Structure formats: structure tokens, C-alpha cells
Amino acid sequence: MEVKKMSEVIKNRSEIVFLYDIKDANPNGDPLDENKPRIDEETGINIVTDVRLKRTIRDYLMNFKKEEIFVREITNEDGTIQDAKARANSFLEKTDIKDKDFNKQKDEIKKAILEKCIDVRLFGATIPLDISVKEGNKAKNVTGSITLTGPVQFRMGRSLHKVELKHIKGTGAFAASKDKRQKTFREEDILPYSLISFYGIVNENAAQHTQLTEDDISLLLEGMWNGTKNLISRSKIGQMPRLLLKVNYKEENYHLGDLDKLIKIKDIENIQEEKIRDIGEIELDVSKLVEILNSNKEKIESINLKINDRVKINLEGLDTTIKINKIVF
Image 1 (cartoon, one colour):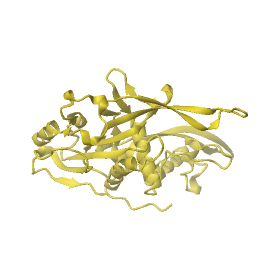
Image 2 (cartoon, one colour):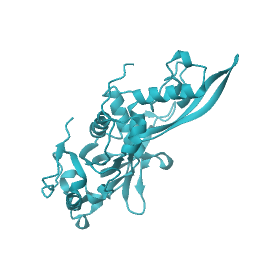
Image 3 (spheres, one colour):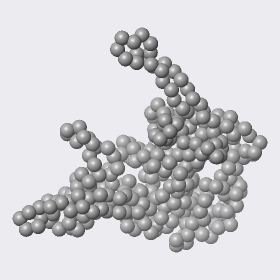
Image 4 (tube, helix red, strand yellow):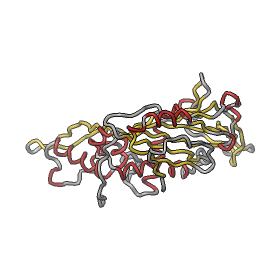
């Protein structure tokens, strides 16, 4: 595979806030609870794991942008699924060092994975190794691992409001078994509506180790937005990206933190939260976010922003000296 010429490794820290919603579907089922949508029982808030968001991004980058992804399912010729060790060994392309020094082979695998796999540059990985090494005339397998901390880290996504869980029953098309006259029944749990907020940080220090570039970050943002919109399966159709905000800082090793906590639904105390059914029914209150961005404008290099046309939001109070770059895909 041809390795693309990479842009500069990122030098500045940034924070990301991403909002999307879903209607009449399941944003992230819990396999330990009959695949029901994840809900915080104490608060009624819908939870979506960071793993779900990363899978959305990976699938988009692989299927739509033709990027190489390390964490993906590969089926062997015999029908078995490739494990992580075999996946790692597939990147050992220099035949002259195969079966030789373990560390040389490890370094070569690491180098090749970082050059080719955008998901490892973004999210890091712990990669198990099982490498054949020659000792005299004999060969033995030596195990180890490659550990790379991901520069891009997301917290669990949480809805900005309490949600309502609906249990739906229906009939299937086929009989339960041979000679049966009655069709099978199907049951599922969905959310009529959920507006979900994710928060992430891009760490410039970890980026030096994975060689994360500005081009990679552009693809990350595209994967979040377009990947969410193009996640068309029975349980996910109906997802729409609503807001994507990336705050880029000037100051070394600095970020404001918790920017997602500064975006609320306006007058939510007067709304029956569980009955929200559409983004058009609400307005986002970003007054606290605007306030903290304005008070720290000297430390902000720029802001990247994309807002869905149906979102009601007022950013007019944002200081005009802060550079706003419209995100375009």
C-alpha cells in the first residue's frame, strides 16, 4: 500500500465538543442488559460509550475515505477471525529482518502501523505481539506488546436531557420452528429522542509519539460528522450531527476543560425533558460557553465550528477578535 505524504504533526492542544441526536432508535445498546439503550438510572440520562463513537469514526474513514484501520474485523481463508497478534505481524514487511532480533521486528511493526493506520495515530492502541525469533538454528516465539497512548481521548457521551425508554413488540416473518403455524415475536427497546453530547481532548504531547497530523485531525472531524450521518443500520438510522466545536489553544499544555458542561438546553427546568422529540423543539443555551471563551480569548488560537441548519443557538456574544473557522466537508 502506498503511504501518503503526511502533514505536520500537531503542536497545539485542542478541545472538541460534538452534539448529535437520534430518533426512534438505539444509539448504543448494552450487551449485558438485553442490548437496551444505556441509561443512568439515577438521572435518566442516556449514555453512549466512547468506543461507539470511535467505531463510527473508524468505519467512516475505512469505508468512505479508504484509510487503513488497524482495529477491524478480518476473516481468514478458513473462516476464522484474525486475532490482534496476526494483525500486527501482517505489518512486518521487511523480509530481511524476519526471524531475527525481536526489538528490530517490533520497531518495524510499530513504524509501519503508525505510518498506515490512522486510528492508531488518533486513538493509540495496546498491540500484543507474538514474533518468531531465531536462536542459532532454532526458532522460538517471543511475546510482548506495543503500547501507544492515544492523543485523542473522548469521555462517555451523555444526553443533555432525561430520556424515555420505549419497549416495542412486533411479529416476525417466519415461524419459530418447523411445522409451527404461529410467527415469531420480536421485541426491542428504543429511545424516541436523545440529544447526545461528547467531549474530547487532542493532546499535543501524545501526538509526538503517534505522529498525529493536522490532516488526521481534519479526517477525525469529518468522521465524527459524516460518519454519524452515514451510520445507516436498523438500530442507528435517524442519527444526525448537530454541532461540532473545536477550540485550538496557543498556550503550551493548556486547555479550559469541561466545555461540554457549558452547553445546556434553554429553560430546561420548564420542559418535560422526556417528552422532547425533535431538535426544533428546543434552543441551546451557550451563554456560559461564550462567557468563558471570551474571558480566555488571549489563550485561544482559533475555533473550528460547524452547526446544523436546524439548531437554534445564539453565538452573537462571542468576542469578534476570536478567529472562527467554518468547518467544511
